[in-house]
Length: 133
Image 1 (cartoon, rainbow, N blue to C red):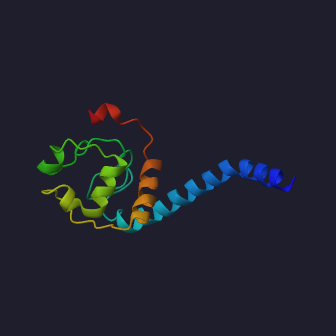
Image 2 (image 1 turned 90 degrees about the vertical axis):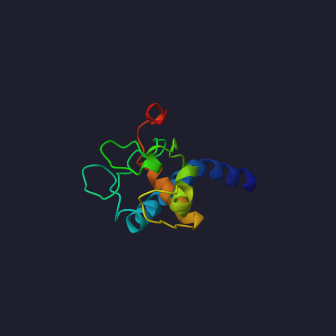
Image 3 (image 1 turned 120 degrees about the vertical axis):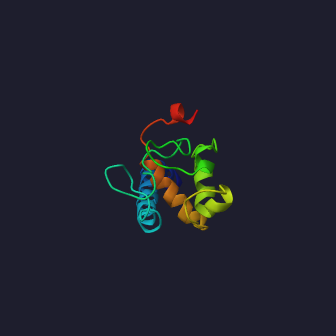
């Protein structure tokens, strides 16, 4: 009887735990974004920033944000900002995309990358597949 009760409790708590974990990752990602990315990238176009805003970046074609003066290398790359591409960019953007205007990022900690990716995914609210072709 005890095992069945514990199993039932785990099954009921499972989705709540997953939601809580996702919320914690997003919250940590937002704090890390503010510390590592915000000095150059606003979330949306309402706030001024040196680089293009990162709202809706996941799934977006690189070099496609309107009215931003991208490097030729990035604009012509044909890259789509998948989580794997964003991770590679965070780790070594100069190595990932030689010729980019952005100075080296160097976020090598995969956990920090995971959290930032969780946050970027949370602020990607549109389907970018049409502009990624």
